[in-house]
Length: 158
Image (tube, rainbow, N blue to C red; front, side, top):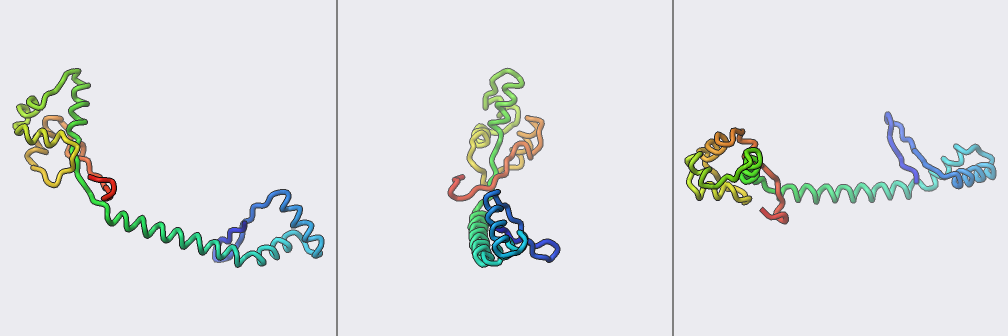
């Protein structure tokens, strides 16, 4: 099938044809007393409206898809999750020992409920800067390593 393209403001058409199609075009050219290029141009002109319609349909489908994707993206929310559980596991492996939440409480000065909340995979609605600073200092990391920022759609759940 022909694909109209515009190059430097001039409409051009790229066509891929099989050997069998080439033979048919050659036969048509011989019958009409024209060269192959002219015979191809005649076929393109004959089928151009069909090609244009197909291109329009494809463009409409693409636009509809893009609009639905944009609408879904507008509904997406940005959430913040703690990576503390993952980071503690990495620290346990690196130090070849088990780290208890009570140890984290003692090292950071944070209460057990705070540590428990930070160890869960649930998204934060709010968090204390004091907790972020204490955990980052204990792990010797930056805030960007402790917190994961994600975009989620309502159907993905939070």
